[in-house]
Image (cartoon, rainbow, N blue to C red; front, side):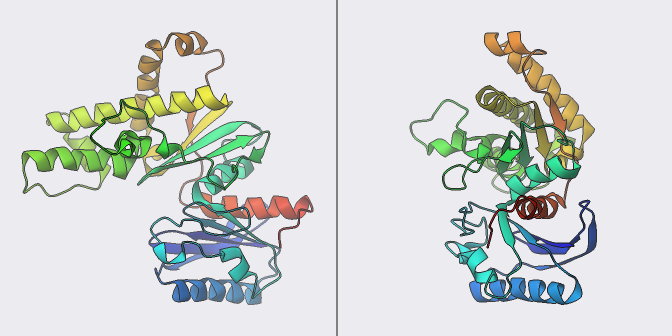
Length: 313
């Protein structure tokens, strides 16, 4: 049995995961943005789990940029653990192997184990949420980059740069993420029209307004176009066999139908890509695993390392 832990900005989910990737006895606690209490909570989860089961390895999924040695360069919204050598801290209480993965990377790896990328050695996984994260799998291996930063797809600048603004405003994160892009841009437009506008952070509410509201329609059209441009850029750079889209919105069939339609339209305006459509341009598909992807993927990583005899302590 393995222990999987998925650290999020709001909650920490954890559970036992068997050799087939099935989760047993999943639980959760609130994430506390205080270094001492945060570490104590993780150590308690691990210590209690070790008493209950014979744990072969511990896989941890976390937000942010994570060094190969398990140091948290960043950690998303959990500011108190920036710079913390998380793996080193946790190995103080156990000699059970621990692997720590970025949450989007973990989601990508999970698809290789029991998801839609089974048997596919080269693919990309893009996770849409507050921002846009991703994982790059090449020849069955996760590409992390020199500093654990590979896969930060959302940082790509995809629009013409406004010289008067931070160029990150034209990034995929701020144009095509669900919260940081679609919702944020809609609220900005509405607040400019009406300072009394109550911000909306549920994309479903904005989609529901599209037929009757010009701003919603325009923002949603740009959302799909910008996301399509980002996906085609990634396909051009990495030549994957498949692109998987994860995140809550990916469960919506209407979203996928419209995304595929928009990608086809955008591709017709790019001569070289249009020629390769149906030949080498990878298909787009929804990720199979949703809320448990991080936990499962992190465990799969430590499982593979143990089986391959890789030293991870």
